[in-house]
Image 1: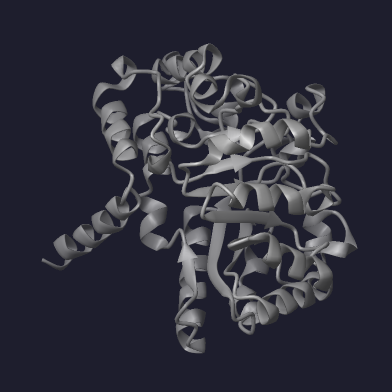
Image 2 (image 1 turned 45 degrees about the vertical axis):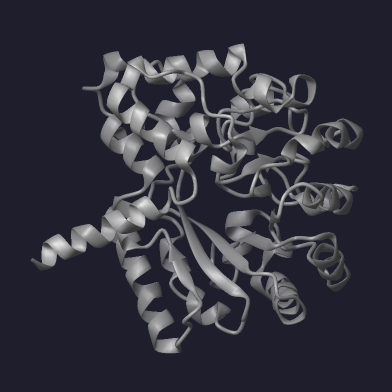
Length: 373
């Protein structure tokens, strides 16, 4: 009986991810049931998307060990070090109306973008929620007040080690060290009511240095989510001999965090994914159990130059241009539709195979890059 109750609770958490998004759950079921025979077009009801992601710049002031910027494919596409044309975005911005949330994310540090405040203000004219991802190195006191006034409703920041010297080791520069960014986050928390989420990449290399996280961050009152991201196995990771944390290492980290949250009485702090969600997540589970990537159907991501990309880690693959065609025509444009057709037929580009364990139909019996390494 207890096992049945446990499974029911897991499914409740799973179904909660579709709440208020009828078109999303309908498409999810269609793809699961029909597989290669499902339609390669996606829905256009903006309220059924979790968010729309926009990448204002690909400039960055760090050199993170696991960043996709290091990949040859990305470097060869001449997309790094570029800023979004604000005037083009201004013309596109009214098409954001209907989305619940806009997320400024992707390759780059967005506080380096000269018109970041104007972009935030413009987005907030059309969407009720605005998420900003930053490495917090430029999150000064002045910037804190500007971001709050402009309309940021949620802040995500990236920390990959909670031990001395770890941030510089994994993120490339001393400006990312905890003694530099924690005061920034503390000031942001003390002077705004904006929730904060900390994102941490988890690999075999840094997993141990993540254990102190809850104790290190316990005084940041606005902290609401600790989000772990399993290492994407880029070719650079393979060449460097860096491996993913094992399932046991990953689970033990989450359990340790959960215990520290309980001991410290941090009732408003959640772990995502938690232990159950690691096993049952709409996107991850579809990849692992059905060899289908759902992201290109449900996660609109617009690059700095207006091109839709298949997902946040494939910024080098430009499909149809939303700035030129508008959201609806580009979202189901010829290039994007063909990309989805290939996914449904299990015709994956090498990038998808390496980083997400997806396999082409003729390769299902072969080991993935992770099983080889």
